[in-house]
Amino acid sequence: MKTHNKAKAKSRVPKDGQYPEIIRDNYKGSGKLVGKNAVITGGDSGIGQAVAVHFAREGADVAIIYLRSDDDATETKRMVEKEGSKCLVLRGDLTVKKFRTECIAECSKEFGKIDILVNNAGVQYPKDDIQSITDEQIQRTFDTNVMSMLKFTREMLPKIPRGGRIINTTSVTSYRGSDHLIDYSATKGAITTFTRSLAVNLAPKKILVNGVAPGPIWTPLVKETFEDLKSFGKDTALKRAGQPSEVAPAYVFLASEDASYITGEVIHINGGDFVGG
Image 1 (cartoon, rainbow, N blue to C red):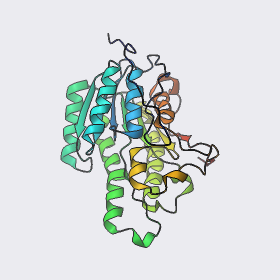
Image 2 (cartoon, one colour; image 1 turned 180 degrees about the horizontal axis):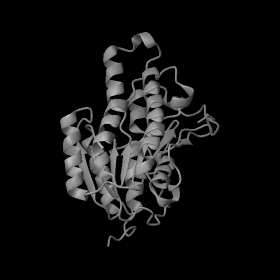
Image 3 (cartoon, rainbow, N blue to C red; image 1 turned 90 degrees about the horizontal axis):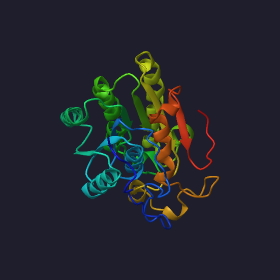
């Protein structure tokens, strides 16, 4: 039997948004996911990294899939393993069928069944004018955020048993739009609808499908794509951006038995940006 919480991974405390807080040092795991195996796309940094470490503190073994940031993936693996859990690391592009097939084969070999699939990988390219959004950008954003998610879920499904969980990362922009993230917002709207449709489709198999819709959260993606970081998150009711450590517990909840009567729903974590749905 695995022993957890003997040597907890330390999370750096953020200062002025310089880097994200991945997990609070006082977060106490309670064995909610002991014996579970999870696959997390976009699991190397930000929200995905936080989900991986929270899952590990709750007892799950995890596989993280990422595109290119080896340093972030190595740090995630270190933090997960410090919690006493296994961490399979898979690097590549989920828009490529060959890589998706390899991922499923590796996860199956390592874990057998996959109890939890977290579809979190995504890209965004802010543009203030729709006329400056190229065909190539639209294609890449939809291929990464929507098409690969749908395909990977379809291909992974045979490995997910009854009682399994699928959790998709959508966004507050799915509900209120965004004037500078037009194509990104469109993909997140598609993810929300995909979540609801798949929940109904898989209900007879007792596989629960839900989503999380973060608002402004400090992640490496934000630092890479936004120019005005000082104002980021200041338009929320709480007047600040959130941390990955404040988002990941929602994924733990949806993955656990505590959410056994919830499917087709989306949890909003956005600092008080009131939206419907």
